[in-house]
Amino acid sequence: MKVLGIESSCDETGIAVYDTQSGAIWQRLYSQIEKHREYGGVVPELASRDHVVKAAPMLLDILHEIGGVEALDAIAYTRGPGLIGALMVGANLARGLAFATDKPLLGVHHMEGHLLAPMLDGAGPQLPFVALLVSGGHTMLVEVRELGRYRILGESLDDAVGEAFDKTAKLLGLPYPGGPELAALADSVTASTFKFPRPMTNRPGLDFSFSGLKTAALTIVRQHQPLDHGLRAEIAHAFQDAVVETLRIKCRRALEASACLNLVIAGGVGANRRLREVLRAEVEALGGRAYFPALEYCTDNGAMIAYAGALRLLQGQCDEPGADVLARWSLETLPAIEA
Ligand code: KG4
Ligand code: ZN
Image 1 (cartoon, rainbow, N blue to C red):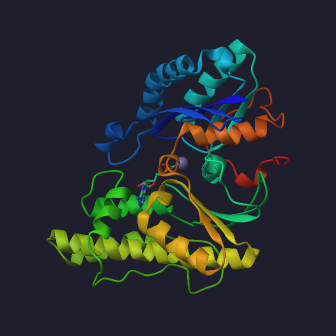
Image 2: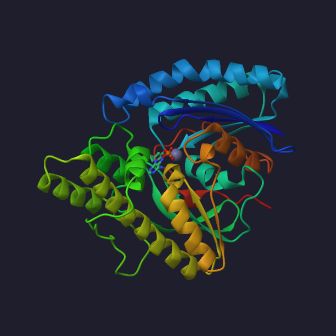
């Protein structure tokens, strides 16, 4: 079964086709980052407009490559959560195509896409597992005992990890989205004289809070004006250390609480080198295994939507008539994917 995946929940237009038989993936990805950079964050209206311009030509291009629209068996798109206007662009393109070709259509949960992305190369984890989802909009620990059924063990009460990276990067004068650049700056030194708190680690529970780290960074930045390159690198290093250490402590706690050995790490921040290294070592020390998507499938993309959609479409799941896009949508409300 060849399934089309359309992702347009934020500032990435992703179009991909996933073949459930061969595992082959065809994909196109366009990032709008340059358009939003001068505003220091994603401007929803600009995002919707740019998806309108880019999505259809990318779709035509990929259809040409797979041998025309007849080669498709089903269509999946990101139904939510995300920016409403941006989601509507992808959803309407998907609906139009499904209507014109009479093919099954399914709206996919964006975070399920991220969560299942490590399985795209066919070497995913055994059930049960715990997933750490860390992106620009979400930070959560999810228990997965059955494919498609998700139990949220903990989540951020304020900023998402990616958001904390981006805001702290901005304080250090790095361009938006500063996560990867802050990480590179942090990795350019091996130690720091600064120490940031590890929020909410000294009390039980699996929720997170990252807004305090940004405030801690602001205080240090104010105390050390003007900042030279060395100081900025030390602040970045201490910030990254605090984030990684906090996530390590909570992941360990989540694995122990749910008696799981396998940990999936997904979402944009899952591309962070230090986080990958520390979590891999932690999970292996517990006798388990850590699974990461390939780097190209960590950040938003169409392939993860095609894949998650394919698992459900193969079971005959598809959209109810009149299904609408959803700005907010709990992962816990999804139906199981029968094995
Ligand atoms: O999953 P994603 O592409 O989009 C959302 O659904 O939010 O995640 C984007 C987030 C941004 O905040 C970005 O700064 C962060 O992931 N990010 C990183 C790294 N690469 C991307 N944060 C830290 N280290 C990285 N290497
Ligand atoms: Zn995402």
